[in-house]
Length: 269
Image (cartoon, rainbow, N blue to C red; front, side, top):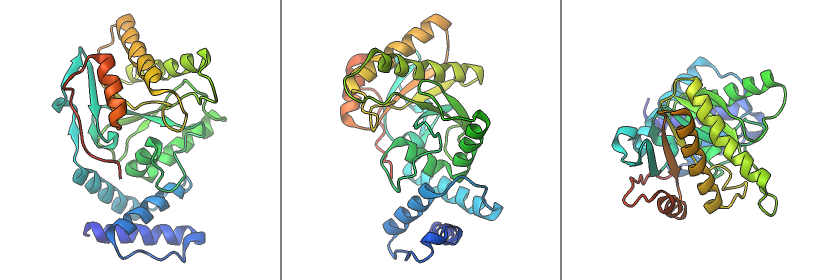
């Protein structure tokens, strides 16, 4: 199958699976089809999918990621010992694990084509990721509290694992509890990485988007927490601070003294 044939097959199967959308017209243009497919992925509830669907989906998503361009950890340059700064699309980074800024449901973002990292990671990992997260939540029996971390396979992403953490939601003035919970997110992910033999972890800017944590303060906490953890535990886990916006990149670059740090230019689509 061509990539277009795969895309149309997936759209038709998802429309058949979700009766409320069966009358949706499939756009003629490629961009419209991409947006419709992503939307259908985003709103799909966690449930098993047929083997034939998974095979086509996996082939489609891996080709989409390949076309966006995969960045290898080996191609990045350290800005400090065991620490990297990279601006690019985290769904295209090949390292051991990437961190997802999740919500307390831990099921991914259900808003069609939303710009959050949770949406992007679940979209390009495939429907298996939402099901894996749902199984973790069923076993836990309650929503995820801020500051902890869970691990799942990465499925179709270039990395091996996804570490899911729920950051604090800032409702007004920044509190010490907000700061402590954010630091706990970074520590929990590093501890989970250590227990699972993960050698490299890419952190997104946890809580700085929809959760409204000020970027400069969040970056300072992220860097301080990672440095303190590595010093205390003698951890050899390599850490990539991944940013997507130029403003975030400038903040991390200043805090890390990282002039000329590696950048990636792929956009999340």
